[in-house]
Amino acid sequence: MKALEGVKILDFTHVQSGPTCTQLLAWMGADVIKVERPGVGDITRGQLRDIPGVDSLYFTMLNHNKRSITLDTKNRTGLEVLEGLVKVCDVLVENFAPGVLDRVGLTWARIQELNPRMIVASVKGFGPGPYEDCKVYENVAQCAGGSAATTGFREGPPLVTGAQIGDSGTGLHLALGIVAALYQRQTTGRGQKVLAAMQDGVLNLCRVKLRDQQRLQHGPLREYRQYGENIPFGESVPRAGNDSGGGQPGWIIKCKGWETDPDAYIYFITQAPVWEKICDVIGEPEWKTHPDYATPDARLPRLKAIFERVEQWTMTMTKFEAMDILNKYDIPCGPILSMKELAAEPSLRKTGTIVEVDHPTRGKYLSVGNPIKMSDSPSEVTRSPLLGEHTDEILRHVLGLDAQRIEEIKASGATGGAAKSIAAE
Ligand code: COA
Image 1 (cartoon, helix red, strand yellow):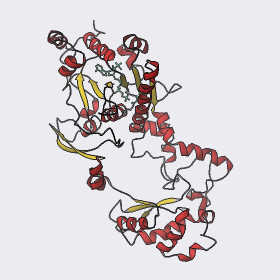
Image 2 (cartoon, protein in one colour):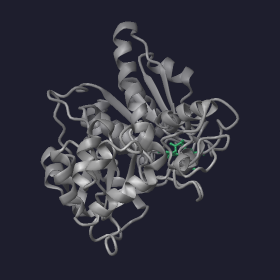
Image 3 (cartoon, helix red, strand yellow):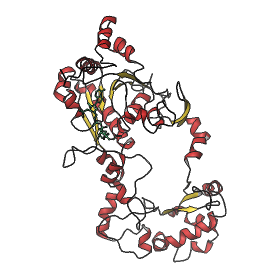
Image 4 (spheres, protein in one colour):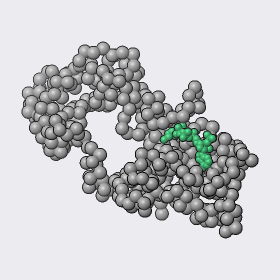
């Protein structure tokens, strides 16, 4: 038994944000039925393709454990089938551009008529306001949500991050909203609308920067390196380079091999409770009592010099050797792990965080499994569906249609072939 067993999700999502959300729910046991446009499907099936004619890794890595039905929802029969699915599913998840669902004919009022228990969950770029009608992709959300302005080095331009906080981050927020709405429905018997706007999701993840914006009114941000370098602060939170977001100063420093290996670095935190151990390890025992170094306040203006000294020490060993030594003394640190290293990391394979999946046309590939581990609801990662692979199965077993009706639906072109659109009628 899985946590969400019995929950049926009508997955009308595409690209990344929506699909990450429904993939998580599928890993938790929900039956996720992905509705795709006949012939093309989710646009990511064909994007960034590494093998001609085969579903891209972009698609396969975001759509595990789902079933796929092809349906032209702009065709009258296709819309009838979609409405049939609304009646029997618990949650509809979508991340189309604003207004698309209404144009399909699935207004909130219509959905309520069909199934008052239905939860309608949406990702949009922005919440209500001046930008609510805009289309949004990952990097736009990172820029609009405060991440880009606060990422990078002070003297350089704003930067987007490698972590997909706009897409996958918002998918995660939406999944939580869906699960809470399912829980509330047990009491009220009613569905509700759940909205996760990408700007809001990114801003939520940049919470500490809004904290710093307000701290700025009361003086310089002393844990930012520019404080020690006597560079004045402006009116908004500056980019902090690799400064730590918390109260314990940290920085990325070089390790042995950095000249040729772009990832031969370690993140080192001069955590106050272990300062004396740090002094011993790097060979500066007098810093334990020296007034310039002994207290966190005394160290703040000298962070640059301190990390340069620590770096002299870390450059004599690899990041893994440094990690071994520092961990013995409980000194917080972390090697900069490349994707190549992560893909080969045995402990991540063991926990199912990195999994090998077999696909009928692609063969074996690596993916990230469910990052949320539940003791009573284990996740097995199964391959993403081929386009329309489960169309017949869903018509027959989810909608309970007989062979004659299925033939009629197919003949209409609603599941593939040339279908007449409602607009053309
Ligand atoms: N059958 C027929 N038509 C279908 C269909 C199906 N099965 N599935 C989708 N469509 C149609 C829709 O009805 C819509 O048509 P319309 O504009 O004529 O009404 C169209 O396909 C989808 O439109 P849209 O969502 O605008 O796609 P897009 O590729 O132009 O834009 C995004 C993509 C991501 C920018 C946009 O969907 C968006 O802003 N989404 C919200 C934010 C988001 O999730 N962004 C992150 C994506 S990772």
